[in-house]
Length: 519
Image 1 (cartoon, helix red, strand yellow):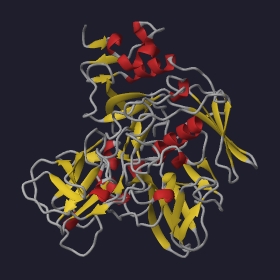
Image 2 (tube, helix red, strand yellow; image 1 turned 90 degrees about the vertical axis):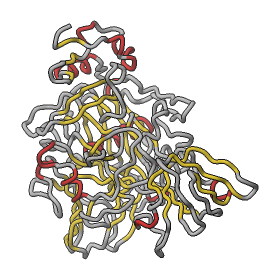
Image 3 (cartoon, helix red, strand yellow; image 1 turned 90 degrees about the horizontal axis):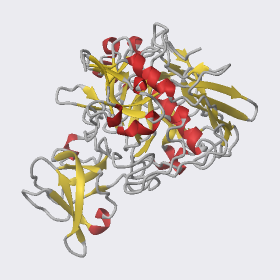
């Protein structure tokens, strides 16, 4: 068929519905010489799927958590998230602005995304870098005394702006948007990736992300405000609530540590008290350490020196009081009753068998990650934003968003960073809860004060005292012991920009290089 041929649309299983009314000319064109689909053909293909509708949501500024769907969004029922074996019921599937596809690909040094495979084309694999591809969206956000009103469309309407990070630094519009499907992991050579089945890369910080991603030269970066914005907007439009954990709790209440009850050698299991084993989920990840030190903190090497982030594959009762937890490990190990077994963040791909939005077995038990719009989140760790930092000035704080991560540096924001104001909080150090959210310079951030885990946004923001001077990193989502402090809007602003620990992760971003919030 030559070096520049059209992919067989009959193999594009996941996009069959979208192609039914289209000719072969609408199918993305694969170039054998580059090993990529042409960006122009993908953009044209996505354009054929537009519905031109304006989907809106009105977010009340008061304590009420319920939002109101507006425009074309009014009357569309909230999805019913799924679990493995019971697919989600999602009326938004294949609707204009909510369209997405799983792809393999990446980003060039100038910020231009590329696609090498599309799910269903015979080339796609979740063990290669996997992204969620969406059309570029257009948005209008207005504010009244009572509400913030957001409208999103796949077609630009009067007054609308392009979504955050839609413009490349040279002013060109991206042909499409890419969002990492999976949390960050690294291969044997330390190369960052977004793949299924891998142990997530933790012990990272804002500053280590700059060097790990080679941000200044690759176009690659840690998760950005634009990646965060997409998930939040999709959640608000689809589920119409400010309380994200009421729908997807994430792995935020799974802080379990256990001592073995039986010592064994040459084994792949750990025998523990039955009551403790009942708290452990098959498919989740754990560490086992000789626990020769005095601290139970999972960041200490002696608490994961036997195995690190092994998957629970089954549980078998040994007797009335004890249960054996079996692990997927490369080689057998020894246990002792002085050892310590602990839960840690799930491995990437935990939600692969979930069809649509949802979690493996429960969306609200606070033990499991979830997937929304194909993006897997809430694995039991923070996700560091790579282009957002918080500056404490001695009299208050300012959040900065850097449009182009090529300028990102360790220790502080570059001069090109834009102010997003401050997130809520009193002058003293502590947890705070905002009443509502709005987008400022591409970052969706909490506003107002006086809420809690049950009213307003419901997700906590932690800040240090206003008298503090220095830079702090933006830790989103929350780790596996945060419960109600965590959620889509949760932020910890406590740690310096170079602080890294066992529950600090992130994900790749193809959207770090941008001209800023598009006009």
